[in-house]
Length: 259
Ligand SMILES: Nc1ncnc2c1ncn2[C@@H]1O[C@H](COP(=O)(O)OP(=O)(O)OP(=O)(O)O)[C@@H](O)[C@H]1O
Image 1 (cartoon, rainbow, N blue to C red):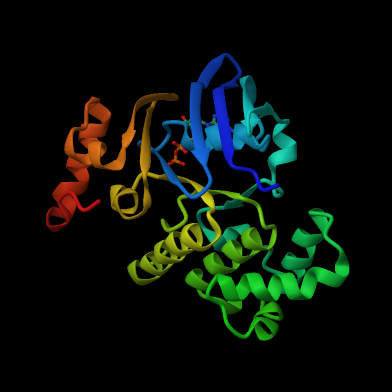
Image 2 (spheres, rainbow, N blue to C red):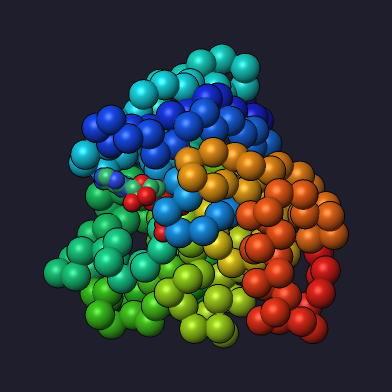
């Protein structure tokens, strides 16, 4: 059975005595894109890392629970199998002295996939991520690929896992505008074709307008506002939301209320 709903409930993260994430709850359903937005340092990445039991050194999850289809699930059981991840800066996510094929093997092995299925699975995933000539690409090292190709490759590794949910942390931040647009189109297409549920972490309201159905605005470790994307742009209630929307519209006035 394919999973339908993921709930993060009351997630809290501390670094020593400092609370960095305080009681964040959200629901992500298959086929929807939920954007977690907020200024740098507001706690977006730590919320997702806590949900996947992948917090950086020096931080600890202090509370909260993740539910999958109405039943509690240990975070480490989500990683890779139920939730795939795509990160900012694809170049630093790949080992520079290993080929894309090495990375693919490592990913599929970690998922416990039958070796006889690997080739078919990764070739299919690369094509789904818009990368043709999979055989040739699997022999390339990261320095032989552009930032856009590497981000597609990371998305392909996520697709190869066939996880129903994707956490995408600033997936376009380090790309030029052309590649940004291509990656956003790709994510939109994957949502449509496979019913992926995508949790999109971003501070870019243009990305939110393009992809999100619902938006949660974080500030100082807490969710300050949660609303459908149209309401966030048309009637932002919280000061932080108003500041994010105003900053976006001052940069891109022509895009006024595009969702
Ligand atoms: N390993 C760590 N040890 C201590 N504090 C940390 C650690 N990692 C992050 N923080 C702090 O936790 C807060 C939230 O960080 P987080 O990375 O979740 O923010 P963010 O909203 O994702 O920001 P950005 O958009 O810059 O990635 C920040 O104040 C950050 O400095």
